[in-house]
Image (cartoon, rainbow, N blue to C red; front, side, top):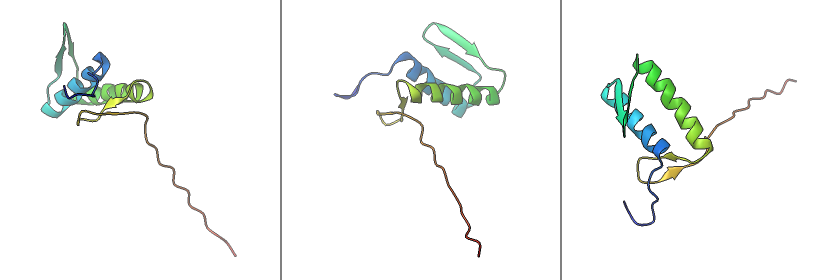
Length: 84
């Protein structure tokens, strides 16, 4: 671990393990002493999205570069038309 970078919390490590498994196409994930088997990749993606939102709102989501991102960025676009 690089100096100044805190270690990952268990939920953050679970999120990264889930993302790695989706990328590999694996449906069984082993984390510490637990094993989870998903029925489909779609179910895994839903779980990853849910976990991402929970992490982003509380302790942050690992960004893959040793850092952590907080919050969820949302963009709102507004369009108007002037009528004459």
